[in-house]
Every structure is written in structure tokens, then in C-alpha cells.
Image (cartoon, rainbow, N blue to C red):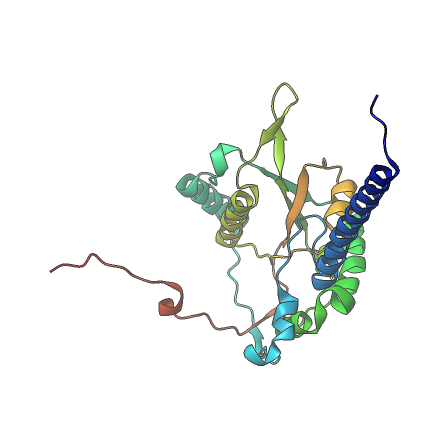
Length: 268
């Protein structure tokens, strides 16, 4: 029979203590990294887990262009069509573009159209509650400053007044007929493409909207609207007609040579 000598027992004990201490250290290190991530990205959307490196921009402020805080707002020009014309233009647009592409044709999107006044108001209450925290805490001073030219804040009265709200959810995965999970490839890119086509379709029909991405509201809105856990809120679009006194910031666009490059075949 093999007997443990006192020296060997001592060595085994030392080894066990070392293993446990390193294990605890690794756990604490991982917790510390998670805390650091949360502190570095306090605005991170808990639903989408999207984290733009805004704090790095703030730490190196001298190397970044200051935001334009004062931008003139001008009257919004809009053409309103008769309802029959809107239907005709919508049908022509659909026949021209058909439908949006998606990764492996998985169509990973859900468009929830809300017209009920009570539901719209509940949506507004959820968003304004979270947006106040976003503006005062999560987003940070630079992001808030960058938004001043749009004259926005956490008060979102348009969520009540717009006739229709469209909440666009991405499906991070789907379900096969047998109930097993089905992969949705490039689901966020696919839904974003679909949103771009929808924005153009609304404009073409004579309607207006504004792209909104309610930060840290997705899970509560998903529960309110009875959507499953595999759906994550990507965008909210209030849809309707502009008010008579509507204004928009007089923004400029980048010139073509800043956004497009041409590479031609070299010939001898």
C-alpha cells in the first residue's frame, strides 16, 4: 500500500491552495473585466449589446473635431399625395424593388405596427423613462453635445401623436418546423437593409418618419408587445404626416469624393 509521507502531504496541500487561489483570481479577474466593460460602455444596449467606443473619443478629446452645436433649422418641404396616388406609388415601388435580401434567405425580421393609442402611450412611457437615464448618465457629455443640433431630448411626444408606430425587431435565430433553432445569418445587417428599403418606400408614398433607436428599451417593449425572446428591437419608426410648422436641421452632406472611390483597370 502506498503511504503519504508528511512531506508529500505538505506538498499536496500547498498545491491545492495554489490551485484554489488561482481559480479565485481568474474569477475575480473576469468579474473585473466585466465591470470595466460596463464602466467603459455605460450606454451599451442590454438588448443589442452594441457598444460604440465613445469614451475613447472623450479621453482623447484634443484629437477630435468639436461637434457643431448650433445648426440652423429650416421649414420642412413635403409633398402630400391623395390617398389613391399613395397606393399607386406604393404598388409601383413594390414591383420595382420587390423584397429585401437576407442572409441565406432567412428573412430575420418582424415589423410590429402599432395604432392603438393606449399601447402607443405605454411605449412612450417606457422610452421616456429610459431616455432620461440615457441623456443624464449613459450617453456621456460628448454624445449629448453631438445631438444638440437636432434639438432632441428624452421627451418623445411624437410617440403619442404619430398615427402609426413601426417597431422593427431582428430575429437572432428562428425555429424549424420540428421546433429546433434555426440559424439566421447576418440577421442585423439583413434587417438594416430591409429598414432602408422601408424608409425609401415611406418617403416615396408621401409619408414621413424619423429613425429612432431607443437605448435599453428593447426588453421592456418586447414584453409589452408579446414578442418572443429571440426577437431584439432594432429600430422604431413613427410614421405619419409632418406638422405644418415642422422644421429640420439644415445639414450638409459629404461630397461624393469623400464617400466613393474609383479603381479603373490600368492599361499600358
